[in-house]
Image (cartoon, rainbow, N blue to C red; front, side, top):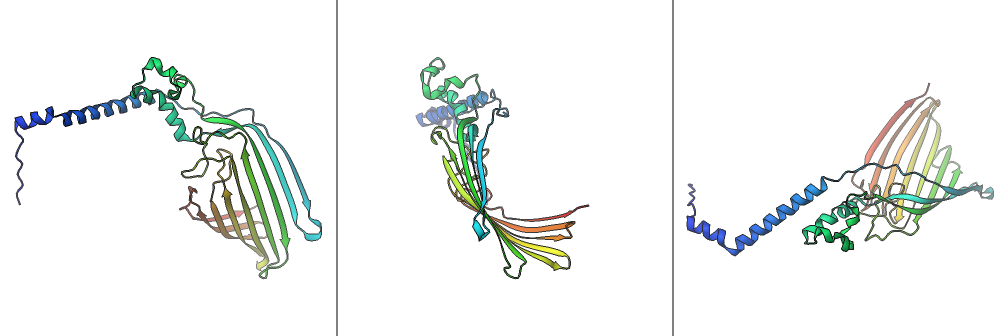
Amino acid sequence: DVYNIHPLGQATIEGILASPEFQDEASQSIQALAAFHAIDRYAKTARYFVEYPEDLRTVGVSFNTVLGASGWALQGEYSFHPDLPLQREEGSIFQEALTPIVCVLQGVPIQSLGQVPTCKAEIIDNVLDGHVRRDVSQAQVTATQIFGSLFGSDSTGFIAEAAAMTVHDMPDRAVTPLDTPGARDDIADATSWGYRGAIWLDYHNAFGAARLTPYLQFQHDVSGSSPAPFGPFVEGRRVVTLGVGANYLERMSADLSYTMHAGHHNALEDRDFVSMSFSYSF
């Protein structure tokens, strides 16, 4: 097949260029390009820096006890962190930083920026804080028990821990959202909690003088996501680890495990992995 192109005539081209539709599209394209260039130039005037907050304080109380003859050991702790720095969500920081130039592009005169509160004129030539300070409370309780033989083992251990974190006077999520470490498409909540647990079996002299310890660890963040950089919870996150450890005469040890991740907001949801380690003491 042969394809031919018939050039447009001069009159046709002039008609296209003179049409209102073309002029409107050209004007919109030029305005969009100019806006993009203005935002790019404005953004390049900004700089970022890392800050190490000072005056971090913690006040806490703890307890531990054994529940009678049951053998259950119980431990607990409450801690209070006044004025703890909490990381703001990155997207909201960038959006706020670009607010003045966006207002100008929408027709607000530069000299009038200060008269429009939503234009954030106060951040021009100033530092935009990436964190806010709030009082934070944390509480946790841990239970431990060493049982007798199970599945032919010499001993069986179990430990479980439940914990909660509360941010006092939490900022409005719609105005100042806080970041959540390890989360995908999620922002922090005022209250978050979850639990952790592990069970293990000890087989002494399983192979000669070698001791084997198969174990199961689990983690479930039940409700709420904690703020960065200190929060331990991501709502709905579930992590399960199945493994086995070996120890020979307290000098050589090895460990093999498989970890599974789940949870809609869990950034590691699709990153199950196998881990193997070996150590020798001398």
